[in-house]
Structures are given as structure tokens and as C-alpha cells.
Amino acid sequence: LKNPETITFIPGQFVSIEVDECEYRAYSITSEEQRHTEIRLLIETGHQGKGADLTRNLKVGDIVKFIGPSGKFTLPPLLPSHLFFIATGVGFA
Figure 1 (cartoon, one colour):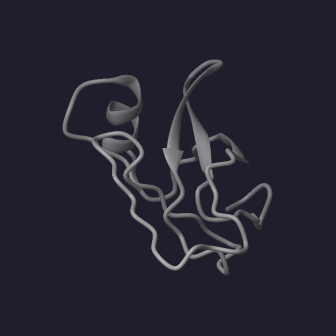
Figure 2 (spheres, rainbow, N blue to C red):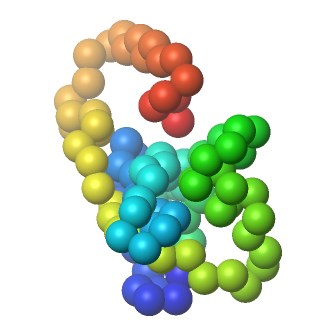
């Protein structure tokens, strides 16, 4: 991360990457929440599209603008003893 140099997020949040001027695509954060100087994202690049094309062609040192973290798909502090998560192509991160 460059600006800001750190980020704070909770599991279940996402960032939106600028793929064109004022056009964004949302990607789930897959990093450990204790890491504050980098983020990892889960991005499918096996198809054509502004987000896939941009990320597929990135090189080390390229600058990517994003907003976030955003989203409230998070778990409450007190959890039941059994949890089941079901997902299809979107939101499985």
C-alpha cells in the first residue's frame, strides 16, 4: 500500500478497484486481518471484462486505485456452535 500506507478491515469486507475513470469493480479481501500494510484479493481473470483485463495485465510496480474497505457481510462476535456457508460463483471468498 502507498496511500494510505496501512489499511484496517474485518473479514467479509471488500475493496472496489478503479478499472476505468470513475468505474469500479468490487473484490473480496482475502488477507489476514492482522496484516495492515498489504491486502490480498480474490480475482477471477479467466474471462473478458474491465476488471479481469486490468488485473490480468498488471505488472509489479503498477499503481491501482481503490476505495474501501466496504461492506457489512461480517460475522457477529457471538456465534452459534455450527455454521454453514454456501456460495456459488459470486461471493465465495
